[in-house]
Image (cartoon, rainbow, N blue to C red):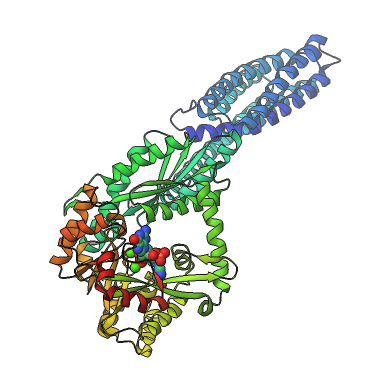
Length: 640
Ligand code: C2E
Ligand code: CA
Ligand code: CA
C-alpha cells in the first residue's frame, strides 16, 4: 500500500495527478473548517474558533502553494517518491490534528452545532478520500484515523442519531475506498500501457534513424544531427566540419563477388569508421550506397581536421579480410568547415561534396578540404555552365588534332581530336574546364555530336593510313539514344569507321556497366577501335576490363612525367606495358615531353607515344604541313 519504488513512470504519473488535486483538498478542508469555526464562535473560546483555524489556514496555504509549484516542475522519480511519502506522513498528522480539534469543539454549543461537527467530519473525510485517490496509502490512513475516532467517539455518546451517522459514514467510506482501489488499478494499467507505447515509438524512431546494414546512423539521422550541431556551433561560436567519404573500388568488389560480399564489406567499413566515434566529437553515418559521412563538432584547426581525415583514409586503405579473400579499397574524403568556408547547412554539405568530387579527380584515397580556390571554381563553373547552355555550339566549338607517333619510325599514325571552345562571352575555355562542367550538367552529348561531326569531316581529307582518335564521355555511352546518335553520325560521315578509335575512360563504367558494354559492342560492330584513356588512374577491376572488347590502352600522363628519374612511375609504366602485351592490346603512352622520357620508353619497349615533344594539338590546317615535314628524314630525326 506504501508508495512503490520500482515503477518510475507510475511514480511520476502519481505525483502529477496528486499535485493537481492537493490544492483542491486543502481548499475544501479550509472552507469546511471555517464553516464549523464560525457556527461555534458564540459558544467556544476564541483560541479554538479563531486562532487554531488561522494556524491551520497558514499551514494548508503553504502546502497548497508547494503543490502548485511542484506540479509545474514535474520532478524526477526519486524526488516524486520522497514527496509522495512525505504526503503519506503529513496526511496522517493532519487527520489526527483535525480530528482532535473537532472533538475539542464538540462539547460547546447546542444540538445543531454538535450535528455540524459530525457533518463536518463526515463530509470532509469523503472529500479527502476523493482528492487522495492517486495515493492509496494516504487515503486509507486518513479514513482509518478519522473514521476510527469518529465511530468510537459518537458511539460512546449513546445518541442514536450520531450512532446512525457513524454507521452510515463507515459504509459510504468503505464503498468509496473500493471504488478508489479499482480506479487506482485502472490508472496504473493505463500508465503501463502509455509506457509501452512510448517505448515502442522510441524504438521505431531509433530504427527509422539507423542504417540497417551497418548499424550506423542513416542519412536522415545525419542531417538531423548536423542541424543540431550547426545550431550549437553558431550559438557558441565553435567550429564544425562535415566530411563526405566515398569508397574507391567498392563497385568492382560488388560486381566481382556479388552483393552479399559487397554488403559485408560495407559492414566492415562501418565498423572501422565506428572506431573513430570513440573520440566523442565525431558522428558517422552511412548516406547510402558506398557513401559515408561524418560531422566533427568543435573541430580543431584545418591541419588537425585534415590529419583526422587522413587517419580515416589510412584506416580504409588497410586491406579487408573477407571470406572470399583479401579486398583492397580506399576512401576519398571531401571536407567543409563552418564558419570558414561554409555558413549554412546546405553549403556545408554541398561544399564537402564538391571538395570530394574534385579531390577524387586529382588523387583518390585522400582527403580534400574545401578552399577559397574551390569557391572561385564554383563561380567559374556556374558561369561556364550558363554560357554553355546558351552557346551556339556548332559555331563556337572547334577541334584541334595532336599526333600519335610510332616511336620506331617517327611517323604519325593517328591524330587525337581535342575540343576547343571560343566563347564570345568567356573567350577561350579549356576542355579541362568545360567538358567536366558539361558532364555534370548532363549536356555533354550535345557537345560530342557537333565535335564528332567536325572531326570526321576533317579526317575524311586525310591520307588513308592515318587514324582518328576521338574522346567520348561516360554520358555518351550511358543511354542507347546517345550512342545511336553517334553511330548515325559516324555512318553518315563517309569516314571509314575502321580507322576510328574512340577513347573512353574508366568513369564510364561507374554507372551502368551493362549499358556501357552494349554501347561499346555496337561501336565495335561498326569496326571502330576502343581505347581506354588515362589508364592506371582508375580502380576498375581487370575482370571488368577483360569483359570489354578494348583495342588499345593509353597510359596516363601522370606516370610519364620524369619517369626516368622516378622509380615508382618507371615500375608502373613497365608493368602497364607488360599488361597490355599480355592482354594483346596496343598501348599509347601520352604526355611525352622530353627526350629523356622518350628514351626510357623506348627501352621499356613502348611503341606509340603522344606529347608535346612531338607536337602540341594543332589546327586541322597544319596537319598536312606536319606530315610533309616529318616525311623528310632530317625533320623526323630531330622530332624524336
Ligand atoms: P585527354 O583525353 O587525356 O587529352 C590529352 C590532354 O593532354 C589534352 O589536353 C592535350 O592537349 C594534353 N597534352 C598532350 N600532350 C601533352 C604533354 O606532353 N604534356 C601535357 N602536360 N599535356 C599534354 P586538352 O586538349 O586540354 O584536353 C583535356 C581533356 O579534356 C582531355 O584529356 C579530355 O579528357 C577532355 N577532352 C578534350 N576534348 C574532348 C572531347 O572532344 N570530348 C570529350 N568527351 N572530352 C574531351
Ligand atoms: Ca584522350
Ligand atoms: Ca588521357
